[in-house]
Image (cartoon, rainbow, N blue to C red):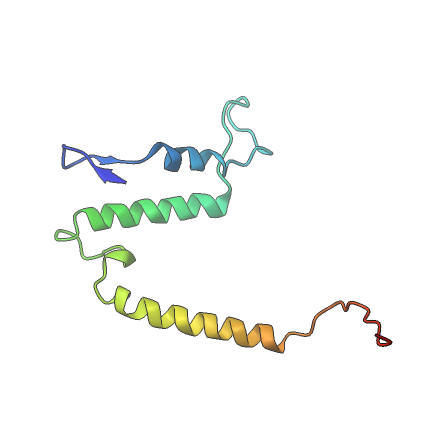
Length: 107
């Protein structure tokens, strides 16, 4: 996303716009089979992203901001991910494999 010369316009890259079409639910057709809706969870994701962009754009006028615009988020982000990956490693160590390879003990 880039800012254009006009302060009121946000420019989205073509790949971002095209990625929206990957999330279309083709099993449902609306309005004389002319339209296909987004999958519900993707629709909500895009709505929340748009709301966060709008809130972050004029944050001095709004009370809300996007989570990525909060100054302390970067400070705790690394701590959170370190804890998350430590937990993932601990879980992998505790997991019992579901299959075993036969080993020839005569060697």
